[in-house]
Image (cartoon, rainbow, N blue to C red):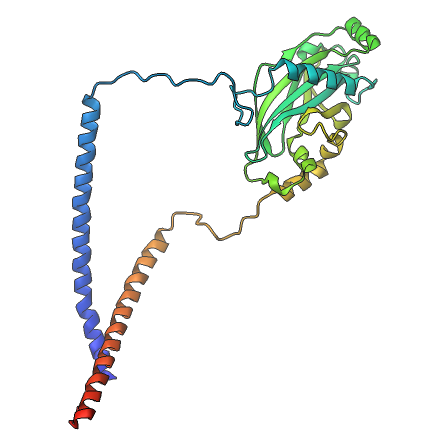
Length: 330
């Protein structure tokens, strides 16, 4: 045992200078490669700067965006088509035609639809139309329709305006004529493009739960005509009709239930993708790399010594068998 321990210690002592020399040679080689790469990059940059620059031919543009593509701020799929505006106006006025009173002081009703939704990417388009069936009352008395601001907020989505909103001023006489004729006039129309939070998986939830993710909170705000103080009220689900055209139009009447806060919270919880903790590095693993390198060197040295001992044992057994067969001592 003492001889083997001494042999192993001597082997490790002899191995360390070789490892250091090899590391030095590798570092020198890497340094030369770095110089060669730097020289090549400088040469290519010089050629590129001295070369003649030609104008690039413009890329051909599609005449119309594809319906299956991802919409962007300048790539509206359904918003500006006459068919969409006509069918949406007819569906909204029909759904709101029987409503005679509102729960908000501005006397407004809303019609919210989603003309486009990609369940793979979470991109969607939203169309909001406002109608006023009664004059403003309470603290909003005397507020003109042009002075009303509308804000949309989503719990798990971000939206940008796709086009300019359309506003119309409706006076009290026109409002009474509109109500008596049974035909409603749009007060405002808003169009948005949104993106559902990418951490949510829409494939894990039902269509009704997807509705909950794309229903916003509509806030109506204005300044008091008397004091100038800001005033705000929400357009509740009781004053809004949902999904009468476009996506989810085949399941009418499900919007108010999907707009409930409990339904939205349940949809977000179900769609949230589970992430196993501890599977990723929070910071750059510098200590892990250094420790791993030393571990590899240690294991390699021990493995090399073990392999040498195994070969020595095999050679010793062969010599012993040969000596026994020839009748000679080992």
